[in-house]
Image (cartoon, rainbow, N blue to C red):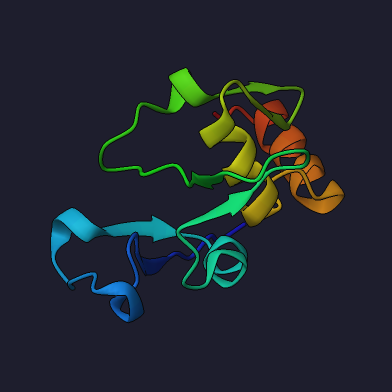
Length: 106
């Protein structure tokens, strides 16, 4: 199995983000397409914009945990990120389960 990643602008150029290492992150093509130029989202029942997880500034384990291939959000930032990136799509969860069995995830 081969995985390729794309350089993602954490803050897109459209929103003034620069192409510098501090604003770039590796992203799979599905996450990169789902995120597009989004900076955040509205969660159900709220009228407040919640920003997305920033891999350069945030600590993963504070916002998420992995359970049987599923990414469980622990914060509003985690919930927003799981929603926008569609991290728990059935195919993606199954892939993480397979990778876990193979000792390749997390």
